[in-house]
Image 1 (spheres, rainbow, N blue to C red):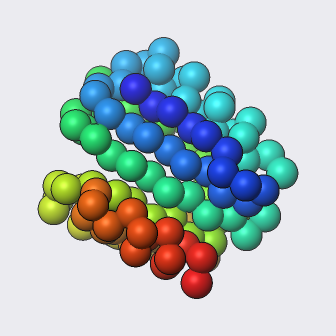
Image 2 (cartoon, rainbow, N blue to C red; image 1 turned 180 degrees about the vertical axis):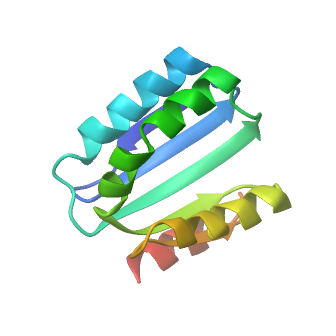
Length: 121
């Protein structure tokens, strides 16, 4: 499951759980593009629950859209990731290096208040 909710003018809250297949990935990326359309200097709050690696088809969809994702990520300055998996925290913060101008910081799932404060600072 991949849910994207607008939270104010320049913020998206994203919830990810389970395993994504190719069709779900396509829908999720289309929705991300649509909901990011008017965002400038945006913030994202990712909540990752019960994560499973996406299917190979989903990964293929994501890689095929990588060039457009670079443009989309320029709309955002910060992303906070809430997860209890140490490896996801590391991968999330390393992913920030792929997107110039986007700072990604990982938090434990019970640190939502701290993540919110960091996004607002």
